[in-house]
Image 1: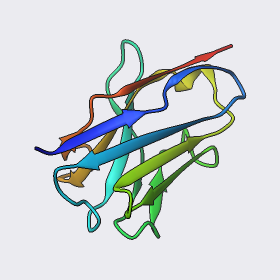
Image 2: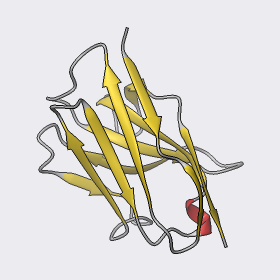
Image 3: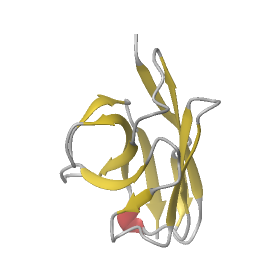
Length: 119
């Protein structure tokens, strides 16, 4: 059974930092691009960033570029999202996803972890 499990969410003040983790199991995703998405309260899910299988290539939404960094440790079957200079508008449920089908659709999704940024 394939599982993606996010962790690391929580409450943080504006300007603070958090690191999210996404641990995978059930199959290997080492050759696959993985991504982070988020869904702010009352809004649709949106793309945050992605990372290639090797970890060499990353891509970010303009809203988080320069503040968020995706990384991965294939030996641990885990990807990460380092979030710095957090803003209240970063408040959302964050999801990791694996095996890109399209820009907005991936085959596997985690259950999400909530991030709340207070002003």
